[in-house]
Amino acid sequence: MNAAAMALRVRDVHVSLAGQAVLRGIDLSFVASRWTSIVGPNGAGKSTLLKALAGLLPTTGQIFLFDQALMAMDRKQRARQLSWLGQNESASDDLRVWDVAMLGRLPHQAWLAAPTAHDHAVVETALKATQAWDWRERSVGQLSGGERQRVLLARAMAVQAQVMLMDEPLTNLDPPHQVDWLEQVRCLTAQNTTVISVLHEIGMALQADDMVLMQAGRVVHHGACADAATHRAVEAVFDHRMAIHALDGQWVAVPRIANKGLL
Image (cartoon, rainbow, N blue to C red; front, side):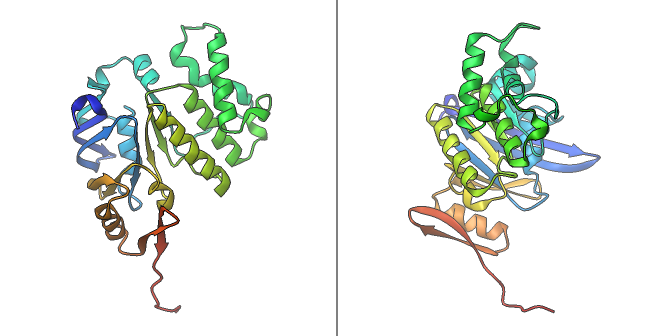
């Protein structure tokens, strides 16, 4: 795969937080127009890696976004090319759903400029795609956790960035809306958007094109989700407490229950 096909490249990236090493020499390349899921045990450094890719943390090493040094780009340029949906993000309870989604258009607007007709059309499309259109005049404070998450996803989609970074995007979503999210990701990659998501739901993570497995601040495997080597790596990193099987043409993670009884 040549460099032109890579949306993000990471070379020897280290991150320390509060004096503790969290990422230890990360080397990765993310193929453009594909969905990559990042998984691993708690404390593996998954969210820290995603924040580093977004330019939200001080790092050593190099990160390139479509062959441009990420930190050399001005903030507005970076915000147009990278959209971010963070873990446990919030929005002011007083804001209308419409206004929250419209925030995704800020990187494309001049300072204090009113939204254009195109901005309105993009936001309408994003809210309809996340099934949040009917609430557009409601305040965020009136929504459930799952409804808020769908509005925040609409805001991220409204950026129309080439790369979308999502940290635990399925939080508070019930199973039907998790499936809706999966369908949206597939639509995005079909439109040449690169999606990188941190997920705890291994079954959903296996639906991605590629998977990055992390443990103790390092990448221990990077490969296609359909590969047997990836399945073995998932089982190993979670201490063989689950097994990967094919079911109805999809890969699923099945828990392995140790027969130890209860004390």
